[in-house]
Amino acid sequence: MLTNKELNDIKALQEICENEGGLQLKLNFDMLESRSENRKEDFFYYEEGKLVGFLGNYYFGNKVEICGMVHPEYRRRGIFTNLLELALEEAKQRGARTILLNAPTESQSAKEFLKNIPCSLAMVEYQMKWKEMELLDDSTITIRPSISERDWEAEIQLDVQCFRLDEKEARQYKQETQDFNTDRRLIIEVDGKIAGKMRLSEMNGDSWIYGFCVFPESQGKGIGRKALSKVVKMENEKGLSIFLEVEAKNAHALRLYESCGFRSYHSQDYYKVSC
Image (cartoon, rainbow, N blue to C red; front, top):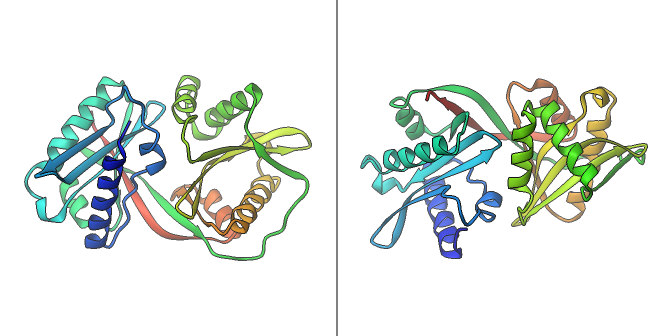
């Protein structure tokens, strides 16, 4: 579990790195604030009491995403290389089957560093922000909290069918994310039947939508668009800015989000490490 000092040090270093590079790092603070006490997932490099290097491992079943940073004035000293070696060793000990290095698309320093790593570009992820537009509220769609064992099992099957996780991975991921203290797990229902799910993370005036999916047999019926519109209206009424993420290759999801008023403003590259 990270201390308040460590979290504040990470935020301070993140601000310096983002301002210097004109970019946005994906450091998943909802996960950082809910770390387990008995797992080594975060790696720090302090110099004279000042955090100048940080790297975090973020697990999604048997997949791990790695993201980190080094203070601009302390680069080219092997700090990130050393942190990455520790992170990769930890990931392999945890049995990670897929290891992805995450870097903002516009980060030239990351691209130069990655030339020396045995990896290849696996995917590009768009980060999108909602631009206010009129949305219809459809009463045939119900959005409610996920609270029961039945809901839990439905979420697992949605992860299996929509995100291509095997069932063991899906259960492991659900167990690891259930205690995120900024999250709300929601169920999408139509006529009393579970059709899909999503997860909301509300922090610092922002609302992020994650894990949004609809069972394959319920797709193509407008359920996803109606559910997304309903949640966006709900979060907008709270005065929150609303964000989500989508893989660049998922053209169907991209069109859905754009139809509800979301616009791309940033992207993240993911490089698969050759183990």
